[in-house]
Picture 1 (cartoon, rainbow, N blue to C red):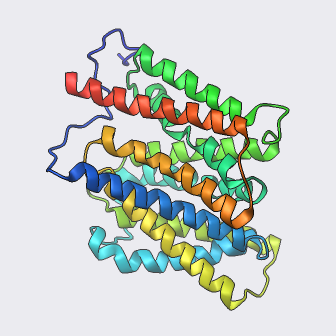
Picture 2 (picture 1 turned 30 degrees about the horizontal axis):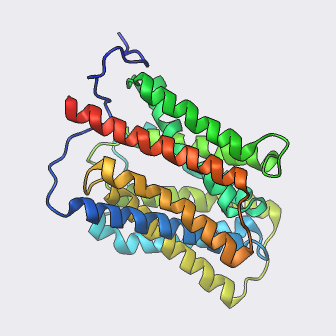
Length: 312
């Protein structure tokens, strides 16, 4: 029988919590890696938003994807090697993951063209809550009433950010929510991978899928002759994205999740800072309030999951 979503016991440990043996200093190293991950993702977003002002979006996605594929192939030996053969048991999760990766990239970058970076990032901060609820629905992981309350509070924060009738709310805000849902699909599909498939292989297939999708769509959008500066910027964005791919995996393998995971919210600070410095964007009071609620709810759920794991 499937485990109920709402746990009747405080001592039920979520399936996603796996105890690891940690060494002194692992928490600080893990926090540093997570921060680097969020900074590089934010810098990549900044590059793409800047370049897509003058270069067709899907052409930019295609060119960046080519660079990412090369960079991943270069660093693959340090990530367990690169294999183009997908084990039979990983083919279905890989297919779903690529659907999530491609859809989330296209939706996110389209929203990024039309929204302030801080507003978009604030909406995306609800991702851990969405993944947690989806894991309960589809994987039978249990949620106590405290974490369900945190989810409700976090989604309330998203509504504060969106606030129908306000400046942020509009079709592109809906696209941003769709991007968040697709990232959740990607992350849940990743759980289906065993240790027989390397992180480099997963990242390479993701980059290839995004690049090919961008190429196909770009044929209808048209191409423009990129300048040398645009090519160099896309190469720089690809380098940031590659570092983000690598550190995203490493950050979850070093230190305690309850200590490391909250540092993912530094991405919001990076987005706000880059939006202000590069594009002159500044979130309003409602976005700040909603962001604070979402971050607080997400941090609490991470802490609560770790506490349940310790009791167990």
